[in-house]
Image 1 (cartoon, rainbow over the protein chains, first blue to last red):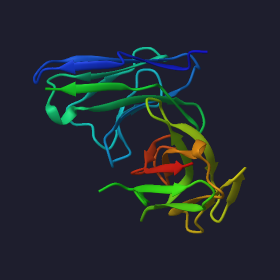
Image 2: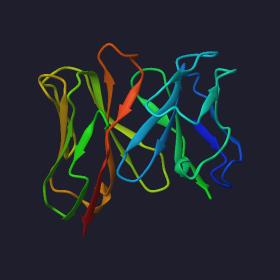
Image 3: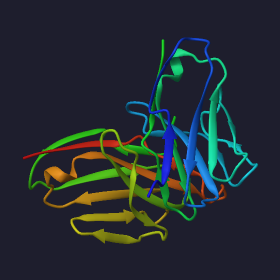
Image 4: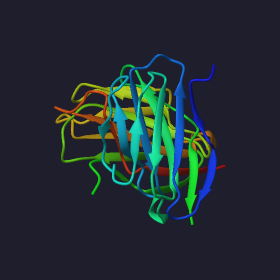
Length: 110
Length: 113
């Protein structure tokens, strides 16, 4: 069972470059989330979606954009990467209260 | 400033010891969850508590939701090396989107054999 799949798993970007992180879930969940995880900070919510075609800002949305064109996919974009965006990014989906997470994307911006 | 603060941030104990991890906020949550995360993996749900004062037990783990629904604790009895990991609390704010989960700062637990 795939669950939540994130691609890529690792990426190194130069400052100013752009990229898109892809999250796909096969559980037919309505809700999807993007978090970033930094040491000592736990998980911080970047953006989330309550259904296909909808998105909303989380705690730390600046510098990121998202799209939910299909129910099963949630894309996170960085238009102009900055070193402060070096982090591990996690995607999650949920139907009820339980969130299911992908394995994360480790992004380094140099 | 994060809405959910966990303490301690790090904990290293010997096998067989007991420990308690705290999750505190000044905000009220409609529900609160505890997750455990292992290296290279995403967090996995351990428990959800929804009623103020609620206590749930999962084998050697005891979870409590504060009466005012602003805080929670996780107590582990007779810790084992397999309990090693990052423990995260997460809450859904009262009045917020039900499924908008805010995570705590995390507690990194190491249980030495």
